[in-house]
Length: 490
Ligand SMILES: Cc1cc2nc3c(=O)[nH]c(=O)nc-3n(C[C@H](O)[C@H](O)[C@H](O)COP(=O)(O)OP(=O)(O)OC[C@H]3O[C@@H](n4cnc5c(N)ncnc54)[C@H](O)[C@@H]3O)c2cc1C
Image 1 (cartoon, helix red, strand yellow):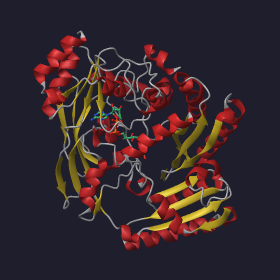
Image 2 (spheres, protein in one colour):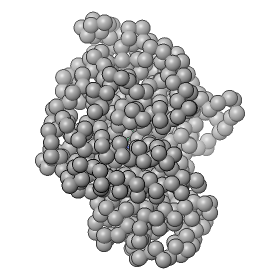
Image 3 (cartoon, helix red, strand yellow):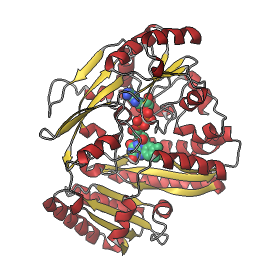
């Protein structure tokens, strides 16, 4: 269908305020934060979508998806626009962005049954502000909390800063509603647990807009006791010490809401005012008084067991202050872009992986060694390091961070800097049996490794795509590798 006819057809289904063809906004919608520097320099090499569409109900989402499916139109679902891996990037000539802006209602907050239901376009901060007034929390706190919306948070399988206590979004979602490309609306009911076959919530959670459009989500609520929070911080000898202490806390059954270890380099950017060139270990204990006391005891015991690696205790007030300024508003996101343009400098690129306790330190060391030895632009790196920020009974994550000066044409930045760095991280992680994507999803820029990530289980993923999106209209190139996408990737 040509673009003019498409716009005419859309105008028959929707009101004027629901169809956006503003050129600047279409340019903005053609890529996400993965290409933030190229986007800001106006050198994006991907097609712009035809329009951004704002449905007002699940029924409208269903009509739109069926229309796109019947007419082979690519669809990119959009929420808060904080995607980092190319999930919002457009690789097709004829694409509609279906934005959840008008799906913005908090449907029900049920304090007795400890759950709240929202539409996909509600920002996490909006719900959190409402439930906090009544002494509750969602427990979900990704750094993008002020901006990210529920549809995106669920679709990317996001995780928050207090995950060690509350879990990732997959532990919080009770039920949800989603729409498939043929227009079918599925409502997964809200129950505390069930054994009614496979857990079908997981078809929607983490689908990154490639299988269905999430329209409604119900999440758990927790009692909130900020007055009881306790913070702990230490300068430590090395990353090994930090990981050993995190493990000791976790395997003994304690669940601090925050449990983190930072390498020297990464500590430098977060804790420049106290890190003294050393690695940093920190914790936060949260919950009712009895739980906080028990958790604090567990943390102190673990620290004591590895006291040889502890260099200095940090004033807990410094850790608390740091936490209070961690989240990013839209203004912070915009300021970051301004800063990049001013200095031709990329701050804050990350690749987050996970593995078991035994393997994670090995991955960290291999990556550091290979980047220092092999990366041709190592001299342009202004920061290289990582931190573990989400721990489990059987392992943890490693969030690699790298900042660099951009000494090339803006359109070549990702090929010359980010891609080779990410390749080393992914290769080392997959080689040792870890996962290449702990929480940002695969997007379009890790899809070259999707098959390796899943191995023989890729069969299951592929079958889901064939079953739910047989014509491949949902977010072309995301998660599932595409031959013609390579021209954008390398
Ligand atoms: C400053 C900053 C900090 C961040 N911190 C964290 C963090 O702490 N933890 C973390 O996990 N992530 C973090 N992220 C990554 C990002 O915020 C999360 O992945 C978030 O969940 C994306 O939500 P969103 O509403 O912005 O989604 P979008 O960016 O709009 O979309 C993300 C993906 O989900 C799909 N999608 C969006 N809405 C729907 C829908 N309704 N149905 C189906 N698919 C949909 C899109 O097609 C896309 O593939 C951060 C990002 C930034 C910029």
